[in-house]
Image (cartoon, rainbow, N blue to C red; front, side, top):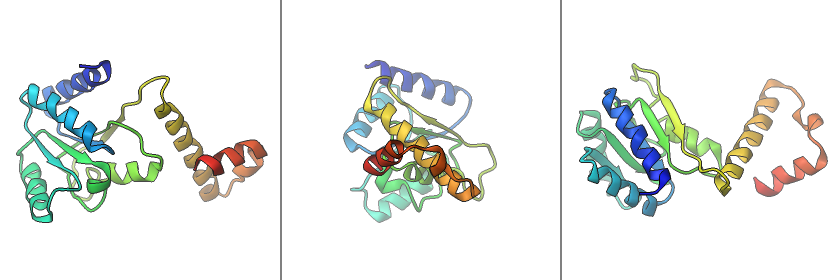
Length: 171
């Protein structure tokens, strides 16, 4: 098991020991398959959903999770990032960052919805010295720019032309 998956397993052990449930998102179904192997090797009950899951089965799995069948819900970011109500979970784990932070926010909102009675904690697992760090930096820049526009402050006056062009090129 890689250090990355080992760290994931430690987090899951800690959450389950505390009586918590978690949604685990990845944009890659292959990565979800590897995570699934780790979860099964630890005999953890879980639900699984990706783009190939038929609508009826998808509804059944969501209902099962909400009714207590499973401690983890492994979900493809694109297939399950919107339209699901998964308030049985109070933790969200993003296994890899998506280019658009709003997509991750939408996914986390599956747990943080009307009917949620507990605080929701979101983890994003980012490996050091990888492109993931650059994606997270891009997230920050996009959020700062959006926040400045919403606040009415002029972020563009605080950024030089090179920084603005980098945002446009990368975003």
